[in-house]
Length: 270
Image (tube, one colour):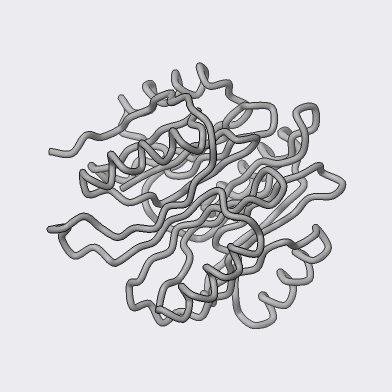
């Protein structure tokens, strides 16, 4: 039986790149590739290579002066998609408007840097259904948009925090996606996040999205979806994430979200 529902602190230094596939004997799992700590130019090269090889990105993250992390899968999906990086707030808005005209929606959006000059990266995919996307949200506005979206039957499906320690901003995507009851938290210290983790886990909820904010706090989406095999770790350095990654790979897990800010990593595996 796989270990489930973990939260831990791993302390170390340095950055790294991970390229891997499922452990031998994995059951019906698509091939996948994950990397982190990658510079802008190298990220572009990787994206082109992976797209050519039939992979598509399921989650992206930008942090710390344009260092990129992502997870890609090779699952035979024919859905049209695109990935962009290094966008200003205005550039992201233009890409968003163009995507909507083409029938695409943002599925993973991340940003880093001050609220007045952020850098965005995003994955868009052609899909139907109602959705909402917002950026530049203060904590209070983020909470208000979540409540409104939930009332409209939408679920928070992408989340990231950027800005500065004294001016944290949030970017999110809310989609018409079924999968069980959900709730959110934000502005939680590691200790507070850990307390939320155990309290919610006891009620059948698990973290499905996680974001590290510039002030060291965490935002998360919690869902009661019945998934049994999963793992969740926060407060990791790049090397700490690499070590955790290697351990979980050996147990048949793959990362489904990687998030970082100021050298601090958080991730979710299934």
